[in-house]
Amino acid sequence: MIVCQASKVRVMNKRKKASGSSSAVKVLHSKAQCMPDFLWEQVKLQPNRVAVICNDSSLTYSELAENSMDVALYLQYLEVQPDECVGLFVEPSMDLMIGAWGILMSGGAYLPLSPE
Image 1 (tube, rainbow, N blue to C red):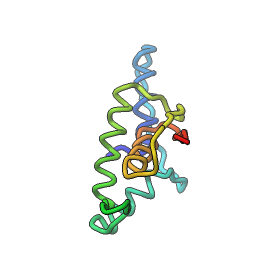
Image 2 (cartoon, rainbow, N blue to C red; image 1 turned 180 degrees about the vertical axis):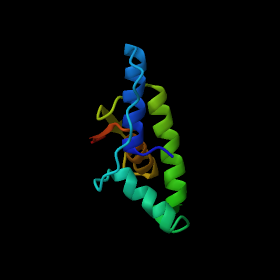
Image 3 (spheres, rainbow, N blue to C red; image 1 turned 90 degrees about the vertical axis):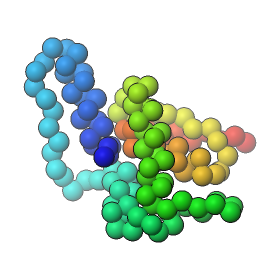
């Protein structure tokens, strides 16, 4: 599972390898949490409970996390850096929720762009 802290560590380790450094960055456990941590907590506690309702469709917490993770992995493939702004231009919808969570899970910073 990738959460924001883990994705930041992954990127820092990539940078260290590119610079020739052999020391890896370790995750320090702290009480501070990022938004994706809260979603993963709900996935663990109530995976089949409805998280999002839009018109006639809905997603459970596990479905929201799974779909968002697909977006996150694609953004990491595109080499989105930690806290890099990622704009999302979409009407309020399931895609908005999945995209916003995916951006946060990738380690990026969600930048809402209004279609209006």
